[in-house]
Each structure stands twice: as C-alpha cells, then as structure tokens.
Amino acid sequence: MILFVSVLAGCQSDSKSASSNETSLQTLSGEFIYTDSVAVFKKKDGIYGVIMDAKAKTLIAQAKELNSDPFASFDVTLQASVQDNPEKDAWPELIKIKNIIKVQPSSSDDSLRLNK
Image (cartoon, rainbow, N blue to C red; front, side):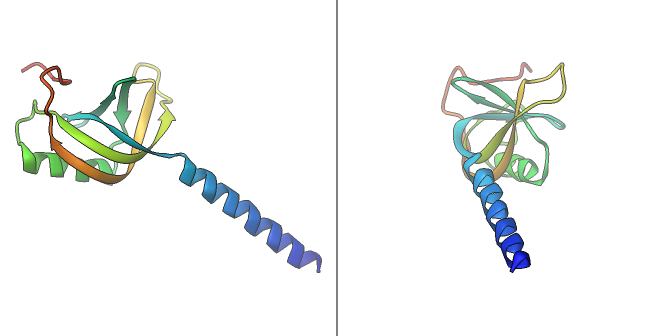
C-alpha cells in the first residue's frame, strides 16, 4: 500500500512539472534576423537572443528559402519559451523555439537590420 501511494505521488509530481513546462511555452510574433552564428528575435517589448539549436536552424533554412539576402529580416510567429541568458555581455533573455508557426518576409520599413 505504501509503495502504491509513493508511485501515485510520483506520477502527480511528474504531471505538475509537465504542466508547468507547457505553460512556459508562449506564442510569440515578431521579427527574426540571423547571421551565420547568431539569430535575434525582436518583439515590441524587447529583443531576445535565439538559442541556436535544430529548430533555430530549421527556421533559418525556411527564411533562406523565402529570401537568401543575408541582411533580410522576417516576420515570424513561433511557439517558444523565454529564459534568462546566463552570459553577461549578451541579450538578457533568450528564446528556445519549440514550433515554427509562420515565416514571411518582413513587411516593416523600420525592421531590425544589419548594416551592409
């Protein structure tokens, strides 16, 4: 009986952490720009570094299909988590992309741009 209660308590604990992970995901819309080794995401309320993992590389590949100009920016909608950046001389927060919802060339004239 004690073993059953322990297993049940463990399952409840696991479901709470899975639930909190899901709630930490946000749907974010903003502007995306990248270079060979760095990507940046800009919303109205701030600029975020992008964790360069497989999902970020997939987003870059999709963006390159739309416009191969290395100075182009893109309007994107992502499902991502926001986390503090442990590096000191960098963007204060990072996003980790979980799902790519929409990618299109930027429609804004005042978009985030890298100087040529």
